[in-house]
Structures are given as structure tokens and as C-alpha cells.
Image (cartoon, rainbow, N blue to C red; front, side, top):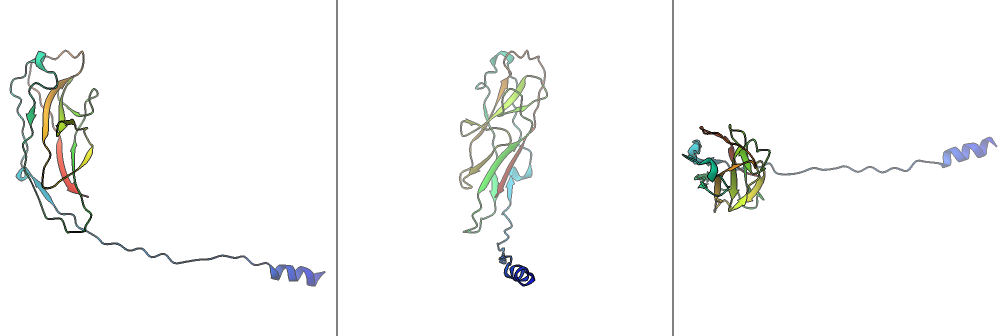
Length: 157
């Protein structure tokens, strides 16, 4: 009996396998872009009639230039554009202003540009960015100055 038990114990073995893993890659330093010569892009809507704010009146083109370093061929990097800031509660494509119920809606090539959204663009043809005042439905705006802030970012990813 002892021989049989010893034979059973010696005859059972655990099977396992192991293999090494190798990780490789190439580090890239993405090219830099300079927007508007590192100067603030200012859009002055001047005098805006409260009852004329409809999402199309007072539309302005956001004029900017961008200079980006050359992308190494085969890098797989794409140019991305993002506009960040605080979106209004009533329109995800509108930047909040310092006046309740008033926002500045952004459009990219004629389509709503959601705040914080990242889009891939062609570095040789910058998109048309437009801004237009919008108001929350039912908002009662008062006369006075307004301002809003956002950040335009270009980066290779």
C-alpha cells in the first residue's frame, strides 16, 4: 500500500509553461505649433442688440494663424484641434460668458464645435472657426458689457 501511494504521489506532476515578453517602441517628440504668434485672439462683437441674438446674427470668423513644425514621415502623428473652456448649460458648443443666459457658440466649418471636443484636421488647410452670440431660451438679458474666454489648442498626437 505504501508503495502504491508513493507511486501515485511521484506520478502526479503539475504542468506549467512560461514565456518571456519583449516590449519595444520608438519615442517621438511631437512637432510644436505656434498659434497667432503666441498672442491672444480677440473677437469684438461690438454692440449686440439683445433682441437680435439668434445664433446667426453677429457671426464672426475667428482669425488666427498657425505655424507647425514638419511632421516626420511615417510617424503616424495627426494634427488635432481642441477648444476648451466652460460650456453653457444650454448649448454644449457655446462658451459661457459672464452674463447669465448668454453664450458664444463656436462652429468649425459651419458645424457646431462642442467645447472640449478634439478633431483631426489637415495641417495644410486650417479649419474655418466662427463665433456667434447665443442666448438661452427664455433668458432675460440686461444691457451691459460681456466677455468670455476659451483656449484654442493645436497638437500632434
